[in-house]
Amino acid sequence: CMHMMSINFLSYNNHTNKIYKIARTKSSNLILISLSLWSSIVLYWSLSTILIHGSYLKIKYENGVYKYRSNALGLVFPVTDTFYNKYFIVFYTYEVICLIFWGQMMWVFDILIISICLSIKYQLKTIANSYSLLGLKDNLTRNNKSTKNIEAILDLEILIQDQQNIFVKMKNMYQILTPVVFIQLAAESFQIILHACMILKLYFDGSMSPTVFLKLLFPEITYICHLFLTCYLFSIVNKQKESMNFALYSCNWTDMNIKFKKLLLFTMRVNNAENLKMKISINRIVNMEMFANVMHTTYSIVSVMMKSYSK
Image (cartoon, rainbow, N blue to C red; front, top):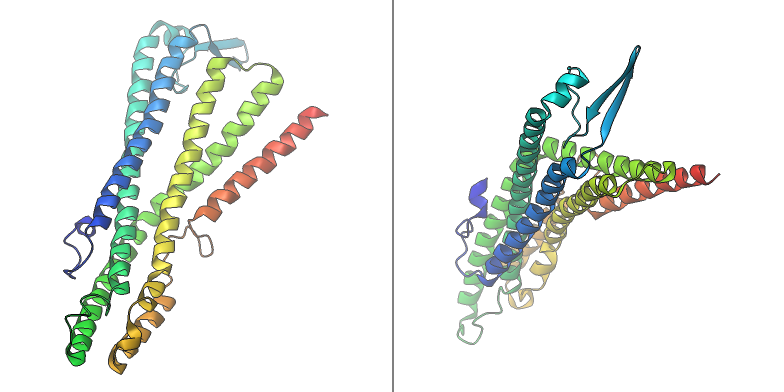
């Protein structure tokens, strides 16, 4: 499947190479944005322990209260508070290593999704651009109409084959990625709602310190941006896939023979029947509408909480 990301994946030789340069630039920019987002969380959460040196996690039990120093991730270990606080640097190092590993895994996931989605999008865009130029290029040098029709039909057949190869790769990759994307989106949607509720609760309770606020705000912004990025990437793939028929219609089909027109019509019908999209359920498509629904749900929950605290 990764071979699809190569510039040599398509068989047609007259594609516009400028599109690939745009794809590489956009892919590099999005990967750098992703790196900055996850790095900011890892860096701030690692330093937050130093900034809130006097903060403790209190756990009640029958005979008293355990007081554990606040750590990067706030993991709970089956040890006494005395032992934990004495060897705090060991637990801190362990949590920072876990945090760095988590950040790297999230970034690797982003690199994979960005590379796959942009490769599909711009490969299809390249094919669409070539579709729209069928019968339009070199018209002045093709005086023989029969030769022009034959060449156009051969070009169309090669482009159709390239498009079908892309769809086969899409289907294979979507089957592999669907469980991963589902878990990722479900976890991020939950975290967005949870962090918003925690920020609101701490604010109304009067226990919100600037350090804790930023520790909650950084991941909230990152999860929102990452959810937007994931939904956006699959949306542009869907949009490009749905625009293939318009590209076919834009070619110079009116000057072609009946064989070309029949092949063109058949291809458009096949494209209409192809409903390949990233779905996390039967009816739930990963697109910008999903992002809007998560934001609307978060807003509704926060609004209810604010009304309850205002009473």
